[in-house]
Amino acid sequence: MTFSILARDPETGAIGGAAATGSLCVGGWVLRGDPLSGISASQGASPSTFWGDDVLNKMRGGLNAEQAVQQIVSSDTGREYRQLSALDPTGAAAAFTGAENQDVKGSRVFSDGIVAGNMLGGNAVLPAMEAAFSAASGRFESRLLQALAGARDAGGDFRGLLSAALLVLHPKRPPLTLRVDFHPDDPIGALDQLFHRATTGDYADWAQQVPVLADKERILS
Image (cartoon, rainbow, N blue to C red):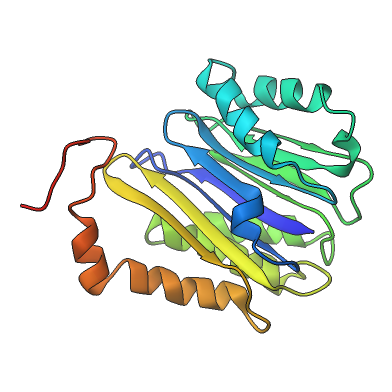
């Protein structure tokens, strides 16, 4: 019931993900991340939030994305109703798509990223998502949002869209976790507007004091 992208920005070391769905609250259900472990998207007909966290723990313990996904999936008897994608801190990615998820479903791995989805509006959705991200310019966060828009315009979720989310973890910036939990018209457009509000003006200025991975004791100076 969801399409998602996970990616790494090799220029900055940031990792991030974005997702959208025809149901509510996609950010709370799907996206998980840790700057030292990687990022994950757990989705599907009966998604497991445990999968998203557990695969990060496996990668933090030293497994690569493929090994971590395989271990998480193999121990769950409900796996055929779930979908999991993961990206480790090196940019390597892997995914599993259970057979009981509704078509169109699948995943595509590309350099420093992966796209995945189920209940898609057509076979063009995932290639369009990858292409939109690869062709986009500007900030890493904007490229992830453009990937969502590309998937939406190629067919998206065949039920339409109700929610969208963005999660970006940067070594020198505060975590950016933005969610549009319900928007009946254009949750991706609303998420894009929220992103611009959150990264400009007084709110962005205030965020400059928040501790970050590269400076855990940072304060307003």
